[in-house]
Length: 129
Image (cartoon, rainbow, N blue to C red):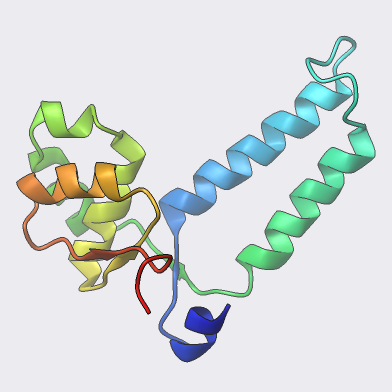
């Protein structure tokens, strides 16, 4: 939270990351509502609370769009890099196309992507003072 406050107005939520989180929350709701949910100890109400919490938190930040420029960078990536994580690659190309850095704890994937996309800047706020 300190970092987010420190960079007030400069922290964006990637549209790709938002899609991932929304999809997971919606899958959780659908599963809980199904006749035979995978997780018997999670109520439908809990999953709706999860969805509402996600929306509340996500709307605190402007959303970084996934642009045609980002998509062109993505399509130029080697297939072996895309296999590392297609959505991570889309997040990376969005950041590069927008001149932004990626804040992530997933340093391993983003380091591999940076080998093919040297303009990519990423930082792990857990390890930076």
